[in-house]
Length: 277
Image (cartoon, rainbow, N blue to C red; front, top):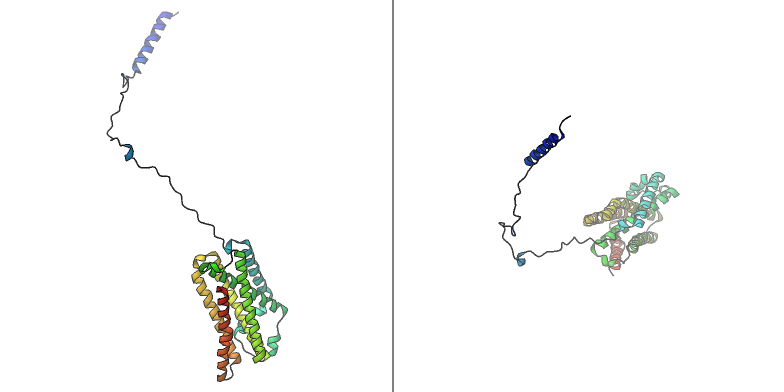
């Protein structure tokens, strides 16, 4: 049996050897000094910058525009769906709409051959035209002279659409009155037919212009130029048909000039003055 005392002594000697191998001498046996010397120069309190509170960006104000209104979007959807439905049911009217703009054939059967479907199609196209013109007017006035519009956006847009509808009805009544007084019934029907056809085509061409003015108001100036150009072209085409219908002698040019002043220039002037005042 091994001696217990020798074993304990051997273990103690091994422990002392390990402790001696793991010994680390202290770096600061006398403790840290009171001050630490550095190369940086101390600055006075007044030399430090003043603390500033960071400022965030100002939020943009919410702009109430027609495109943000569910009522305006619903009106656009109904208008386009109505026109799309008429494309399916009123094919005959769409087939003859361009000839109606220019044709001056005095055939009574051709003028009377209108079905209820064609009348509904024409009415839908004219309603679409009135809505597009009202939207364009509203966007134009909002961009250049918003003080002319009332405070409510829905009220202002409704007034613009109602104004374009009233202007169309006034032109139609004036044409029928002039035709009733100075022309034959066939010539009056040709005249009104050309007016409605030119207005319907113009309404279709104004649709993309009105959508761009609604969704991209930054292009209002360019779109307004396009819309005015389309309106002028439509009126010139209608005037050419009017001249072809009623021109029978050179002396009638005087009546045509009077017509231009009374029907084409005066209503626009009155509408502009009413809009401003």
